[in-house]
Length: 226
Ligand code: ADE
Image (cartoon, rainbow, N blue to C red):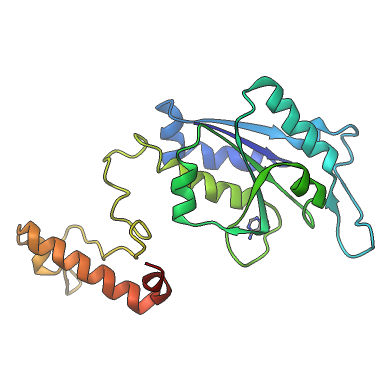
């Protein structure tokens, strides 16, 4: 998969893309990240934002530097690429959207900043709009990192064990069951004996029951969805 990130702050991504699973995915050549500084595509590099028509606080990102960046990328690649605008007004990002995006060959993530984009960016680009939650961040960079992380770990071959994403939270519309590792007792707290019984049937039943229990206690909304 190729992932293009269009941002005014490409340096913000270097650390995140250079560590852990995102780094391993690149080393395995399963993903290629490309950062584009929107400012470099502006007709006047000093001017990527402007005051909003109609008044109001803050600055709005101008359409031209963004369109110029998108079109420069499209000229050098095949045009079939999934464009995503990060905005608090988008559809709520979820594990099922991450699973769909993990099937794409080419993603383009466009990060807004300041008070957001001129609305013609939204109407003029055939883009999906995603929000990572009902709160406003100072830009789309952190949301883009969230989307990249959630998607890349689902690309086949990125994680060691092929089934390691099957049981995790949200994979079946439920939160994950509790996990334990050694030691069997820590500060008087015991690992549930069934997990050390070697009885795989019983372990599976225990995990399923705990997952349902946890989900109904903490996120009953998830159970109602399925
Ligand atoms: N930009 C600012 N806040 C955002 C959010 N919650 N999700 C996506 N992009 C954003």
